[in-house]
Image: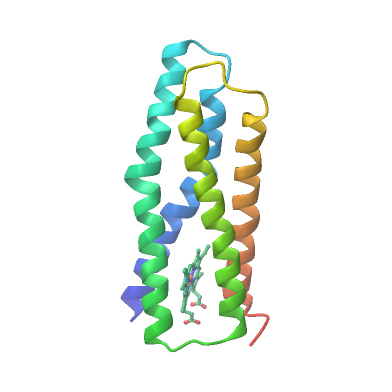
Length: 140
Ligand code: HEM
């Protein structure tokens, strides 16, 4: 069982890290630089999103689900935590949508950089909330 928790943490660290980094990368792809560098940022964002972030999210959720079934945890903090995780999933999907937009031909519409910032900020809030709920267990 400790190994399953370690696995849960490892997947979470990768997912949460990329959830904070990808919006920055997406913003960088819209910065006024030369076109080749923009393409590089967009390609790197897609590679990280599809190759690392999404698999890590799936593994974090799958290992969390196995922990929940095995340890038979049915408490209010877990329901609240899953709600906060749903917020993280929305930020993840938002990042994916922004990566698709940034890959399309320039010029990107104004406001998309702001949406990338909102995705990053939202992710930070939901990650903090999830960690607080699972570590402090304020509701039993
Ligand atoms: C569907 C997604 C998830 C499910 C079903 C899930 C479920 C669980 C369960 C059942 C435990 C064991 C709790 C205990 O033994 O007290 C746990 C531990 C933990 N989870 Fe998750 N989890 C999920 C996603 C996340 C996310 C996204 C984060 C952080 C951002 C997170 C952070 C943690 C932490 C820090 C622990 C260790 C708590 C402790 O040992 O006191 N989990 N998770």
